[in-house]
Every structure is written in C-alpha cells, then in structure tokens.
Length: 205
Ligand SMILES: [Zn+2]
Image (tube, rainbow, N blue to C red; front, side):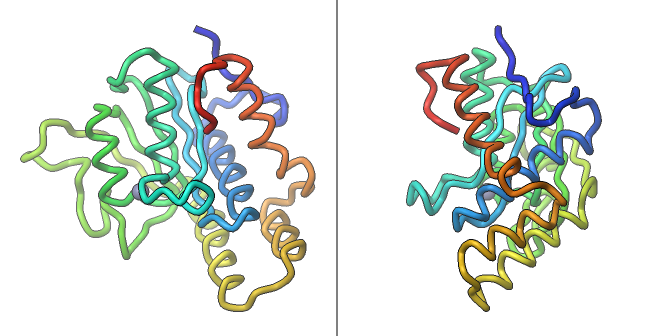
C-alpha cells in the first residue's frame, strides 16, 4: 500500500496537533470556496491515509461532510471498511450522521478541535461514541487546536453576515493561519493530485 505524503508541510506529521493543522488547512481551503470550513484527516499507524473537506455546496450533497468523505476514502485506501486502527482528526465536533459513519467504520479514535453545541453528537447533544446500546465504542478526544478551529468558523459565518469581496475573504481566512495564501490554497489541489496519482480509480476527495 502506498501512502500519502505532504511535501507542502515540509516535515513528518507525528502529533495530534500536526494532523489537526492539516485538517485546518484543508478546512481553510474549503472556506475560500464557500463551503462551511471543516476538514477531516484519517491516520492509520501514523500515516495519513485519507483527508477531505466539506463538499456539500460543491456537490449539492447533503451527506457530503468531510468526515463521511474521509472515512470512505480511508476504507478504499486500506481495502477494509473496518477502521479500528485509525484515528480521525476533524476540525469540528461531528454531527449525528458523521458519528454514525464513524461507528459503522468501527473507528478506533476520534479527535475533534472544537465543539458544535447545535449539532455535535460526540459530546454536546449526544455521546454516540460511548453509548452502551450501540455495538461499538470509540475513544473521543477534543480540544487540540480548539481556538484556531473556532476562530475559523466564526470568521466564516461573520463573513456570510457581512460579505466582503471574495478575494478579501480568502485573504483574511488565510491570515488566520499565517500562511501564504498561495501555499495554503494549493494544499488540497496538490493533495488531490497526489491521491489521483496513487489511486487513479478513486473519486476525488
Ligand atoms: Zn457531519
């Protein structure tokens, strides 16, 4: 199995913060395309095996959440729908649908950055990762890069209320992460290209 690499990061990703930073960069890029900025990364034995941004608007797909897309991609890449040995990093607490997908994937561990008091199903409204009535439990951890993820979402929704020119919005989202706009915007495109190269039959993230 060939694994993804991320030349744009310039170093190995090893810590929860590293993987969440990648999810945040993917989320920022989605935000500049008008999607609610949420990103997800699936890690297996220390290697990133899947990542996706929210694509609901682009695909007009009500199930096109970052987590669902990343879990599907991880299953394809690993050749197994059972993801017991995987951790999924996501920038926002998953909704009930995505927690359902994680349970169906037998996901080993979920790490999310900030809570979603209106739809969160990991700790906020439900605790679907730790419910004895269900046939799987997963380890849930939260809080790594909480401030950054929260600021990203706040800024995105503030922008919806007070629209600024698209270019300015992109610039201000990118400034959140002190990244150069060009470098950050190219993350997902380069990552998708890499995925296609590694796995030509796979649908884009
Ligand atoms: Zn969801």
